[in-house]
Length: 278
Length: 237
Image 1: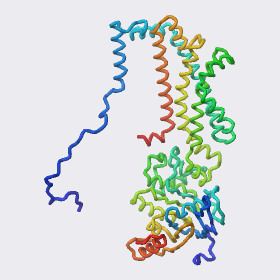
Image 2 (image 1 turned 45 degrees about the vertical axis):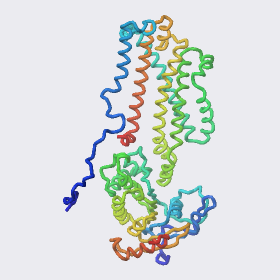
Image 3 (image 1 turned 90 degrees about the vertical axis):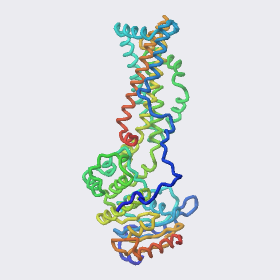
Image 4 (image 1 turned 120 degrees about the vertical axis):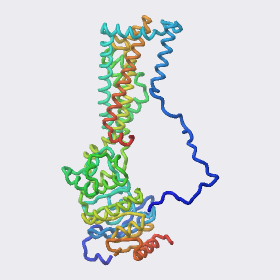
């Protein structure tokens, strides 16, 4: 027989029924909560522009921005500039990732490699990539190669730092395991070191993507003749705030899309981690 | 060790000394383990039992010491944590470092009761299941010597009892010599053919357990062995 209650007992006079208190903390999440702030901002902008409270020369009205975007698309300027910018960012990012990974592997897998490479890269890390611009312009001119190299220099450092860190902080318990099951050096690197360093690499990738857009914005405002930054720079000289806003929105969209892409890669590559979180 | 006179030993340790910062953690240990024999090593924390196991596993190359150790070629280690690679599926963990032995890996998983979980991630398993995968990983290599460092120490009491049954079954099937490090006296008596006690770096007691295959702590002989071992451990009840 199972006993879960004691029938003979009476409730003592001093016990009180349990009161279900409101939980501490901010409470339930609001539906579409994330959209409220931006929509509010847009509303203020619209009302401000409509009532003339916001000067058109300071900030164009939202509908002007939309019409301008439409015009830029229909005459093809937006697409061609967007294409140029994306190309620069992608080439710089791609080369930077390759360089960062190769350097991290050399310095993460061999002590000699670390002795030679790690110091200079840490020094490079202390100097903001954009501070190298004057030198890069002298060396490479103001053409495409300067732009791509600047982006590359901004990209490879976070990739290197996080991948190298991932390689060097492999749990020593796994090293012991590898010894007890008799893994060869090659198998150890393939089965333990590289997969163990992958989360670090992907974290570096997220920083690298952000860094690539940042460098892009800067190089495109220096003597460029094409690209989103150039479009915005040109608009500045004519006081066209609507085009500047279109450019900002584009940069924002590109930033969001690329971060989303990296997070998607992260989710795919690190399925084993997701199971822990869910 | 008279009962083993004339037998070929699987493990032979003579005058083993291991020092950390001039403090002798193992101070002249002699130990023989016969083929297929299950030895449980008891000791207080800090008595040097893990140091002895790590010495046998060859995991202490940088530790200062001397002495003679002979172990077979095929040694498997089970750690207190299951030590599964979180980024490898269960089956890949079992056959880690073994080429073309997927089939044996599957059989081994079936043996520990995890058939059908080959493609699970280690994180999806419970603690007891993870430790069973670790057992499969060590047994698929058909070791002559199985070294286990408090393998059930992190499991809850009920799971631990189930693991005892499983481990005895597996040892009966594969017949490895076993050195199990534990601080649980009952666990040692239930599992082992012989229990040895390490204290301050020396083996201070040994009990051959002749309780048959069904061992109950209610058995007076069990209680007598337990009280002698607790005595050797310096615990007075």
